[in-house]
Image (tube, rainbow, N blue to C red; front, side, top):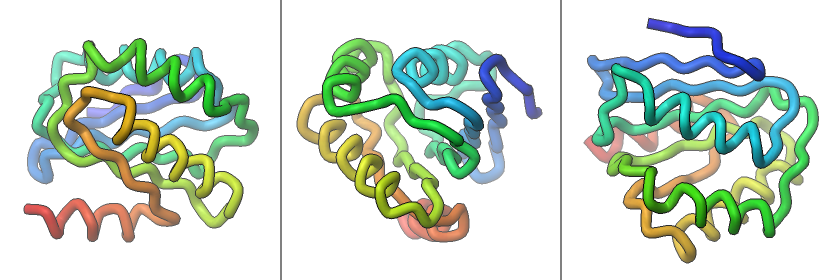
Length: 134
């Protein structure tokens, strides 16, 4: 099942691979990130054990910084019950990759959530990493 969601977001659940496939295009800001959590976690098909692939290659503008990451992690640490791995697909932009790595580091250090995030340039790299854990 695939749904086009507000803010140029889409989410699909793949029970065969036990994955949540999420994508976001356009502006990425704190409100959009929080909305993505609600859209994924409140979906009837949601399974907390599924791995997550979050595709951000179509982001045109980013309005996020370290303070936003801290606030996002603080607001979501109690509601994010995912236990699988999380892959952030960023593309080839070095600045965006560094920002994604910063989010992953904050997530590991500041969040009580069990999901652990790692950034990747491509979906193929992300899927190889996720497949290696199974």
